Length: 146
Image 1 (cartoon, rainbow, N blue to C red):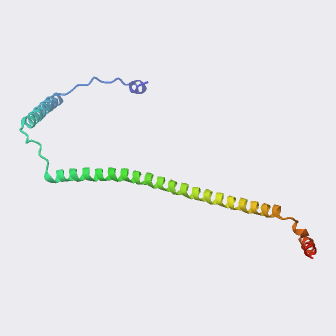
Image 2 (tube, rainbow, N blue to C red):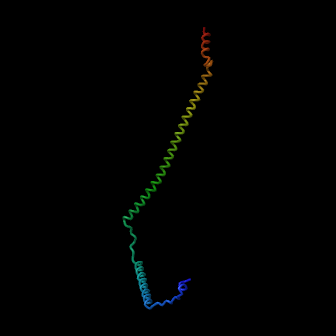
């Protein structure tokens, strides 16, 4: 349902007055003039001679300083990684040396304990009389000498 049906009116045909037609023609003329001015300006700007690109000295130094700082950052990052890897290898070598030293000391301790055990067994085996019977053996040895 549209408005004409709702209110019961029929739309009237639009009659554009002559004044509006004149304004529209004037607007078209103004826009055409503006368009031709823009085209003329862009053509003159396009055909204008341009100087060769010449970087300012301070821009060159800025660019060189930027590259130098970038290179320093890259070299610093790489050398930091190399140093960290060397440090980890050195710490692993030190830990391995400590572990080898502890194993060597443990082996020496076991060897010493085995020697003491063998010496005790040897002294126990070399006795003629058990240690509990020594006083009696001593008395008997005195009797044989008399």
